[in-house]
Amino acid sequence: MRALLCRTLGEIANLQVAETADPKCGPGMVRIAVKASGVNFPDILMTEGKYQVKPDLPFIPGLEVAGDVIECGAGVDHLHIGARVLAFARFGGGHAEQIVLPAEIVTPIPPSMDYVTAAAFFVAYGTAHFALAHRGGLQAGETVLVLGAAGGVGLAAIEVAKMLGARVIAAAGSEQKLALARAHGADETINYRSDNLRDQVLALTDQNGVDVVFDPVGGDAFSQSVRCIGWQGRILVVGFASGDIPKVATNMILVKNFSVVGVVFGEHSFRYPSDSRQRMMALLAAYDAAKLTPKVMQTFPLDDAQEALGMLGSRQVMGKLVLTP
Image (tube, rainbow, N blue to C red):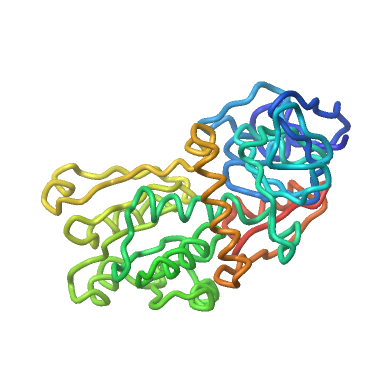
């Protein structure tokens, strides 16, 4: 099969599309003919050797796929050959023509969902729901601040928060990105490149601050969110797209009685695959009912994977990018 191979850790320029052996399917596993694979920031980190998951070289990046089941191992009973599915690949392998994965984390997709949309769904919406509902305990009527609101996971967080009955303040770095956030349901928007995030949030919340911060960005945006989190609020640490890992003074946590909560949806899915599959089934039902509207900005052939990863790394992307091997 053809696959995007990382033979040497470092820059994404080191990645090459090449022929490699087809993966073998064992008990409890399924083999999927990949029709589309989602592009995510951890693809870059994994290639650089900076991600928490470090596969042995050579490896194939790619955390989420959509395609057709072409082989089922012994003991697999909820899937069949020919099933249209999406799946999460914790240890990579998605940017290829085929992949073998544990069947527990593979979920059928509804007839209304195409492969490209499915490939952009698992990580963004799974992370958003796991963060807000499970780790953040977001309740109807609360206010959530979504940072990096025009990215794939940011847009998903807006939609999931609205589905849970929350008020959403979306923050991003351009008016174009904020317009997209509003189109996906944001109630209020803040341009944190031109306006002071703390001051704007406090003004929008009668000086009370927000109940929950959803933060895939880190850096200065996180530092400002500490200053506008409300009493007993929850800051959800999702990622560091800015490249800057911030620090928080523990006296601030004490004075406001707020929590800083880690969100690692991938590891949770690896440890509790049945929980994640149930979560995904509920989210797919919401999609089928037109309550969720994933945004795919652009698709690329596998040969143009470096271009797609470069766009993502430079924070030019609104929504998701998808490869079509």
